[in-house]
Image 1 (spheres, rainbow, N blue to C red):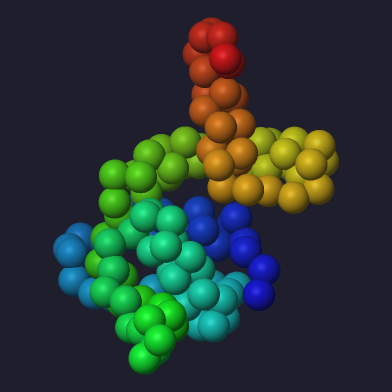
Image 2: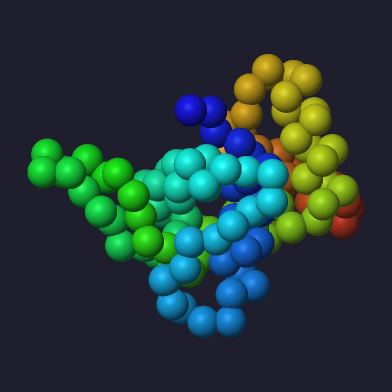
Length: 122
């Protein structure tokens, strides 16, 4: 399966809006349950969400039951919150590299935000 930066951002926004810390698997328009479940596992593995993991007998995570964002999840969301910046930076990164790692995207978003307020990007 492919990773979707847009689904990642939508899930981060979803968990920030949640009024409580109860376990809840979201529905995101335009994405299948399978895609959402896959991204929740990735987000858990990356330390972006707090979740309970369901594992196989060998220990492989096959599903997570998400609760809320971690500090790292909030940090990434703060960098990705502005929809205009998100679209511009995503387009720029894809045009330059042909792919998009979360770390590169985050770094580019932070650099964009810095230059937007008159700070040096580096």
